[in-house]
Length: 386
Image (cartoon, rainbow, N blue to C red; front, side):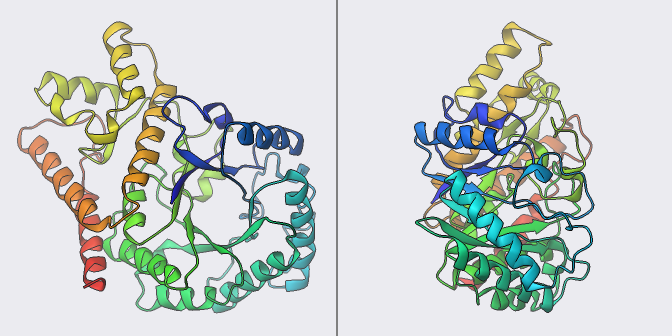
């Protein structure tokens, strides 16, 4: 059980920083770095005690901006035009990817996938066969994960989570690397109870195969995925690394926007600077810094707000969130459902109290409206465990 940090633009600078040492895994980003840069990063991560360096090949989207991806030796020149249902075509990519991962000396490599034109059984069959082929080519002690790119919207359809999980169960890989594709903005939470419940059921079914599950591109929804038994949750400092959307590939390299945000556990939501000051002014300061939101970086932010008003604290906000993430993920390693149920109920009540007292935050849709669907989804999951 461990949290993984997904690399973005200059994210490597955060690895090993104070109060961020709890990330035991790193997900490399070939989109942002050259091979030589990645090789230096891998050696640096090893020196800092990172237990698992994971390579995600990031071939997800044909016909998009790819930044550094084209410079990597496993990248196929015909990705935009090839028949992606052809296992032999994938076998050539896998040969290059296996060789590349060996030269990079990573611990774990994920199988390549692309967004399909049609989400159907054939797509998931090919996905699993491609993963099995890569597994057969990866040598040495490196592990191989079966990447499962799943359309989140389809998870609300009855039997779809079980159907896809049954197809994925044919993999011979060492585990699963799950990517839920969503059209939700990276800073907006999942708010469809049936869709989220289907996602959780899918993850539960994967766990029943006896293989570990990595959940990629998490945000605060990490607490929900832990309730489904996910072993390792991955996140990044930028908002576009906390949700897998097509738009994340279209944003500038800096990505994620440059506004300062504080993640608050008592509300399970994000706060702007004016929100923090408003809560303090309205006598609601007890809602700030609850549990692991009150970490080293939170204290740094409070000091900045007190002593250097108006100065940006974007980087501190990244760190405050990341510290909350790994500490909370670790807290949920055993029997998380009742604890998360309590957190959700408390957070929803806190939002209702703010609404009743006419304390309104900066962003109109930042009002905790996602918490009721989360509670509904979790209620369905709890019944499965009874």
